[in-house]
Image 1 (cartoon, rainbow over the protein chains, first blue to last red):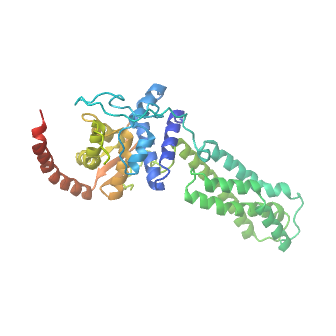
Image 2: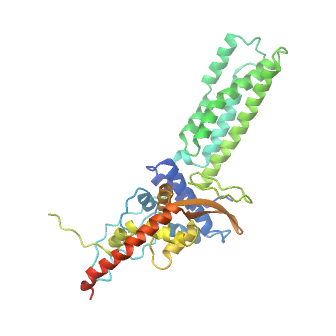
Image 3: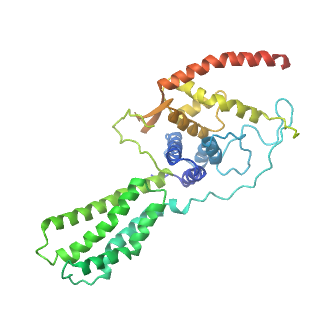
Length: 265
Length: 118
């Protein structure tokens, strides 16, 4: 089940507020707050908007959480428009028990709805994977359906040119490198495997099928590259999608039925 | 000289909380491991020590980095596994040191300010 939009927005806002933190801290905090929300709604399979808002209000303003992460401790937020935020224990402007009227900061107008950063939006993994598929097929579309006569320098140069000018593939790599939805390992795999998969696909479809004398090991390597590349893209895309759902990304709970006692530090 | 505004209750609470909250977390964990929501509720039920529940998590991140708290996953009979926070031996030592300082400190403060209490 996808999380409610309000939760996605809250976590995205929190993630953006934590932008100045180290990535591991940022991921841990956002992930654990995602877990907190899940836990708070555990007994409510279909929570109402009010129930979700109550949980988010208990969690408080993402900016306050980011302040805490930065080590600052500003006085509790009294903004009336704190986006999804806090439940103040006293109202603005009330007198304290000592009778002294406490000066309050001016009211800040309510900000607009939180904006999910472009590269963190839910459609990014789908679009990136689609671009990759088009990119792999791109050379096949641009080359004729005739076989290539030999695996000579000219053919190799042509293949390199087809990869270098492969706009969809390059776009998918740029998206993977720039979007925070992808982990570093996924980025490296995507960037390294993509050109190899294009070469392998091109070779198999334009050379191997027409030349009986191509060693079987070459064909096997090409097939393995293509298959592993496609599998890697599926896995990386699914992980990116999971990070969208969690609102940031991060550690994934061990599979049910496999309790682990290992420290997660 | 710039005159200083009279601090509000919130500001005083914030300042007091700054140096003590992490030890309150360690104190709760000394009673046994707890997952995030449970910990937040235990810290906020009687006296609200947390400004908001969300501020607990940056604090836990710092405690983990310090090696005073570790986490583990444990199965739950009513849903997905939970991430439990445990006190480490270093965390226990830090808590013990704090407790040695805290009681005399509170007593000293009470002693000094008791004359002002009407």
